[in-house]
Length: 167
Image (cartoon, rainbow, N blue to C red):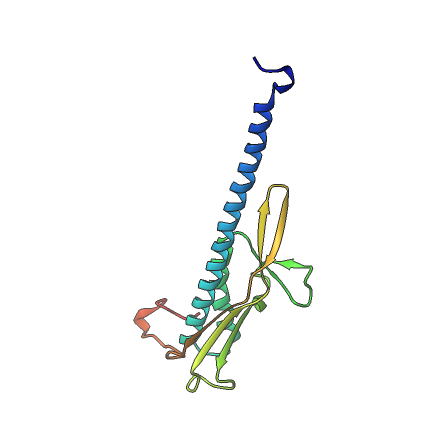
């Protein structure tokens, strides 16, 4: 028979182990979601660079079309947002401003015929980690992808509407 002072120790041990288990479990889930966002951001820069390499350079319409396709990927994670460098305390949706996507055509000052590389980078994109009772905003490291230029200003025959179009 147990001493009366030891009654309830199993319940206390179970409660502590239960809490520790759930804290570790939620931490593992959030770490996995963090890796998902990092991987998605890397894939988004790759897609943006690829699209910019086959489309006409330096067009605002073009940049918006590329940004819309990248936003779709980042929004699927459910935890990406944008913070402008000028206002670091204000968090906005990625669709509000495409300033987070930078497309650079190299060498500097090139045109559609002389560009050799296209570089896409994401800056100011934040990751929102959600834990029970609190959230944590982390800045994603800058993602940068450089690809070789392909044939810019692609024009398709009239019968191939909406096939790999740049817009």
